[in-house]
Amino acid sequence: MSNPVVIKSYKGGIAVYLDESLAFDQLLLEVSGKFREGARFFGEARVAVSFEGRSLSDEEENALVDAISCNTNLHIICVVGKDPEKESQFKEAMESFERYFPKAEENGAQFYRGNLHNGQILETEGSIVIIGDVEQGCSVISARDIIVIGRLSGNAYAGGDMEEGHFIVALEMAPQKCKIGAFKYKAKEKSRWQPRMKKTQPQIAVVENGEVHTKAITNELLNELI
Image 1 (cartoon, rainbow, N blue to C red):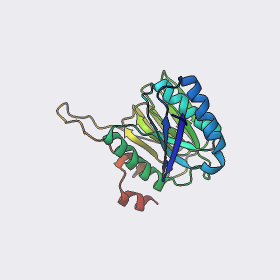
Image 2: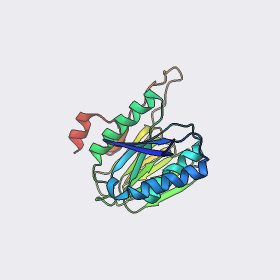
Image 3: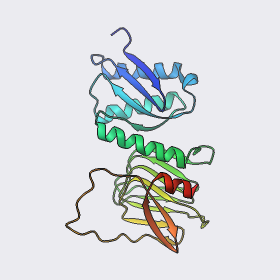
């Protein structure tokens, strides 16, 4: 193709069309240059991105995301795949998160892109938005709020400043330990016969009556919290 990299921008996302025959190292340079040239046009938006035209390994996909992030001020919330169910899930999650936390940068939140694994610990004095999974044995410690755009199956400790109103949000909420301020969440034991949900729903953990409770994120809940 005459242009090895073609970028199409749409509301809330960017589609990147890639030449399937070009060597990946050269393609990576082309992507870097293309986004560097358009950095002013893209601004500082939070977007989903999709890669079209060729199959990519996880390592190649991560390298492309890094190339875009390093050459622009874009915050990539997620990479949208070809799975229609997952694409719908990401869209639903992004809409919920955007409404509940619309000005993360202005509120001093930090962004971390990638999975936490092998016992990693991430600690911050502000709020944290993790674009990835928090695996078992890993911990996120925040003085304010925690948002996981992925699966939370490790430990999450929010509200370290001991002020009221803090929360933990996750696309998939299945923590080993969950604590907000001085209050801990005790997961209810699930029946071995309980069917697995076919579709996950973003959940939020908040303090109510001296206990940490998790709830599905709905428009009614968002209106109540906001």
